[in-house]
Image: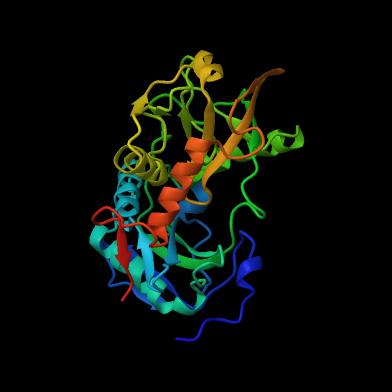
Length: 341
């Protein structure tokens, strides 16, 4: 299989149309068979549920070329499960989880020429998504839905390496108590756009959102979970019913405990204790871990002892171990890596 003639080492993190995508439709209470198509356009009624009431959800995962030259995907079953949770919360039909995984593999297989070679620093990003395609004018679930997956080759999220971020404590709330913060609803991200644009305009890379009920506990950013390291090397992640269950974060916690022998803890993290941590990072599919050097709370700065100039030592070990598993340099836990035949 001949690769596309792309400058793999200089790809940005953006959309580039590939040859095939997967499409399935839900109508009259059942899903269609689903198929690969070369048509990248979507045609739907002006009264579609997604256009009227933002009824949509999505996922994100990557395909990699390993050291041995195999094309693999990382834990797609967890993406399938999380999308099923999103659909149930949004009154959308669940796409069968086994078919989700098979559709992911089919899209990667069909676009294998776009999977970047090992060592390029690039990957094939996969975007499964679902939306209300049928007409609805009253506030109610749409009568029809479409499930799709497209693929796009992307470069490293951070060109030239991960530089420590400066983030601010946001005055906005990311999610409402008992709301939709724990699912990957498209509207959650639309709600964060004003806050992130404002943060960028003020010279910050990201927002830290506190819990919407008491505003005393750390939640997450607009698109990543927090990870902290204590001065004695314990890895701590915030626990909250309104935090999105990041697959990267959950994987890092296993890596920390089982591969690096570190103590791990998922618990409520009060903002007052953030100043006492040695390292801070943001974890998600796009960058794996982004180091945080400074958090600014309305003019008051919290600077982490490790991470102001580069990734802290524990964070770096976590990053190297997880990317090593993804790229095939380190043996993965059973079921984490699925090879595309």
